[in-house]
Length: 509
Image (cartoon, rainbow, N blue to C red; front, side):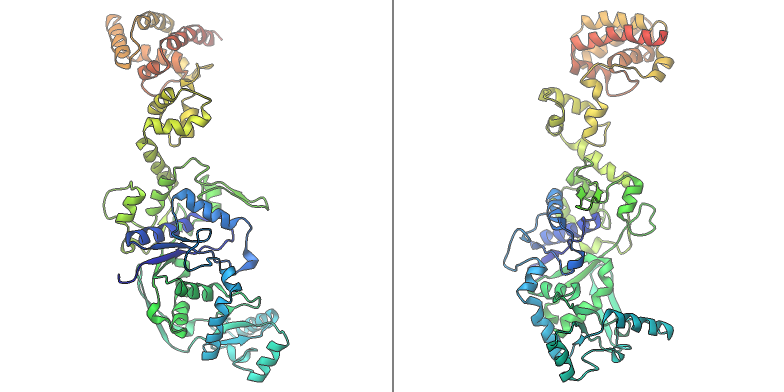
């Protein structure tokens, strides 16, 4: 690649950022970093009617949590700003190029009212036409500068009459461009409508602002969702009409993220129904709309990113766990698939489990320390070592390992009924004597236990479940002798004696 790679993530501040948007940002970021290029964040707020307060701040915070850091853009700066389209509009950035299109005859003024547009569509529909669009077939019967004299057009503009500017799509022309992921895309211009480029409120539409900004910001690759693929031919025409064909970026349209069952695009409603997040971080709107996020659901950002990378891309190997740096090294658009990628909530949780288990006990201890109420760091690290293979999220370490912090106040009723026998209290009492004279180290405790059951000619199960119930109140869990070493001799003996008395009481009750 001769030119320095420059890509952009250009969301609209119309609400929370769906994980599909984060994946688009991620792929842009990985591609830029792979090729030593720049990753820009641009906010496309041309549609002021859909602007949602707080959405821009949400986008910035979501990217920050994910570790996707722009090189330039909103709230960062750079040599190609401003990076909000509303601010660029105020500078007159877009009007200049709209005027250029009007002067070259590739765009025209249209004065049609909303009511007149509705009448046109109804007329075309009644006539059985192939389209109800404002296009080369219908434009001649509408109120626009193609049908009006130059004097009439100027008179209407001078009178303050509202108008839009539409692109004039050429007739019967083959528009062809190459998509890095999908190969060549070919469209007959006869199937395109004359899209609005400049609205009556003086704001450019997405199409106009998008192309102008990409050109002025020297964007080399446009990597975006496949929902923008139908807009590709229009953008190609704009580059040509503005004389920018040589500077036109390469295009790559990413596949959809599908519902878990594969039927349709993943939506926020699927998350509500399935009990899983579809947003990176929590969203709270002023209107009371609220959605949880991966951050608040206790996912690691690196696990979230790793999961997203695989929703459409694969490395061509068996490796599934990648650091961000490894993703940068391995990523390529050529290995992004064309077909939609099914979202799998269970696989998403699996990614988090792997990252949790790969963290050191000490690192996990620091993560749960704020919730642990001043517990000693070494003890917390020991808790994490015992529990991390048995949980999916860090907050479950405290929840599922509650018995490591305090003696049980209740015992698993089903396990007591099934496994606590008439001689269990006697066995536990004898083991209290054994353990009282034993060094409280995992291996030593286990050896002492095995010696006891051999001498008494007991099987492994009955005495083990009896002391486990007394120590933890549960019938299963991590290595019991590791638990005993962690909580110490005094606490272990205390729990064993309490179990003899309390479990007996439960049986009598």
